[in-house]
Structures are given as structure tokens and as C-alpha cells.
Amino acid sequence: MKLKSIAALALIGLGIAGCVTDTQNKENMLAAAGFRVRVADTPAKVASLKSLPAHKFTVQMQNGQPVYLYADPTVCGCIYYGNQDNYGSYQQMMFQQRLANQQQMTAMMNQMNAQQMAFDYGPWGGPFVPMY
Image (tube, rainbow, N blue to C red; front, side, top):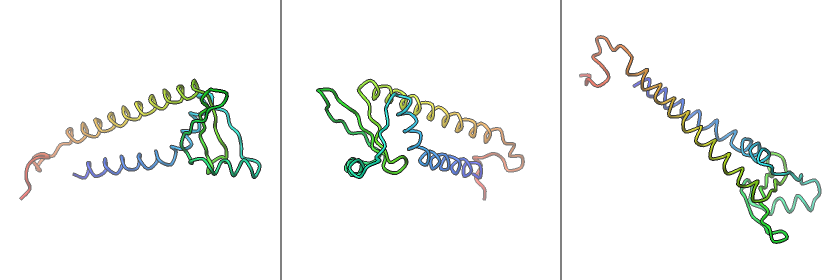
């Protein structure tokens, strides 16, 4: 029981840590996918940045081509922008990251279960014996 509580706390901790670094990780992925950055360094650009949804993609057409915008008013005060290829690369990297995270979580849970099953309960009689 104690091991399960520790495992649950570890998983919750990983989830919270993931939320903290999620925005920064997303921005690193955007840069790696080829998105370019424009800093909001004038009042007009700041107003434009604030008009976009924060930390979400929007698509605008420019010369008949889609331009993907990602507004970050909190971390860098900038807009990431890119084309269809950049967005596709970003989506692929995010998919691979989620898959790797799921595999790591599964491995950790399997390891915790194996450790619990290997525990010598001795006089306690095992994990499934009712205690009266």
C-alpha cells in the first residue's frame, strides 16, 4: 500500500513538472521545426500579440498560403510563425515526444509493480491476505 502511495505521488509530481516545462518545451519544438520568431517590440506589435489567443495556433492566409502563428505573450513576448511544412514537422515532433513520455511512464509503472511483487512479505502473508 505504501509503495502504491509513493508511486502515485511520483506520477503526480511528474505530471506537475511536465506542466511547468510544457510551454518552454513547445517553444523549443517550434524553433526546431523551423518556425521563426518576431518579438513584440513596438506598441502596435504588442497590441497585435495581445489580440491573438495565448499559447495556441492560429492560421492566417498570406499570398494564398497558410501561415501558422503561435503567440507567446508570457515567456518571450513574441510570435512564432511558419508555413505548412514547419507545422507538419512540429506536429510530428510533438507526437514523438508524447509517445516517448507514455513509454517512459509505462516503464516506470512496470518497474514499481515488479518491485512490489518482489517484496518479501514474510509474516504478513503477501499483499492480498486480509488483515483482521
